[in-house]
Amino acid sequence: MGVWGMGVVDVYAGSGQIITIAIMAVALGLDALSLGVGIGMKGIRLLHVLQLSLFIAFFHVLMPLLGLFAGDYVGHLLGQVTQYAAGGLLFILGGHMVVNSFRSGDSGGLQAVDYRTLWGMLLISLSVSVDSFSVGVSLGMFVNHILLTVLTFGACGGLMSIVGLLLGRHVRRGLGDYGEAIGGAILLGFGLLFIF
Image (cartoon, rainbow, N blue to C red; front, side, top):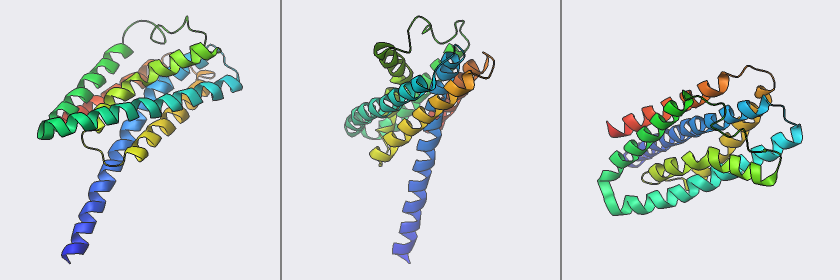
């Protein structure tokens, strides 16, 4: 019974980590959704929706992967302190996202970037994925499933950017700011959860 009971605990702990990763991926994807809504309201062709979403998905895989490796290294150095450091990083990142969502300006100052060019797509994709690096650093301190984590971040970022870009063609301007605020609040909550 001891072996079976231990397996159940391991499965439960693993599923808790998977749920946490999924929720955080959605929270980070809300940033891509809000940017997509802002860009989509300007009018965007379906080809550009696909191209931009693929770039965002790529950077939502690359940035947290780099952060995970950095966080894993820091985790080995700091040991038990990493949980508080991870919580602090998520708390600061979430607070930053919430504050930015209430600042004036429509898409974080990205209106001058032409999303139809390769350079514009790279800049927009990188800018919306930079916060994934910080989350990756904090996740690298305690996550076991690196491939699952970054693929989940990429899938959510890409799919939510498609939804945002398409939704932006049909809705009013205020939704984009609310999406970023909700994503920031979720990350802020996870930061508090890790600290306490």
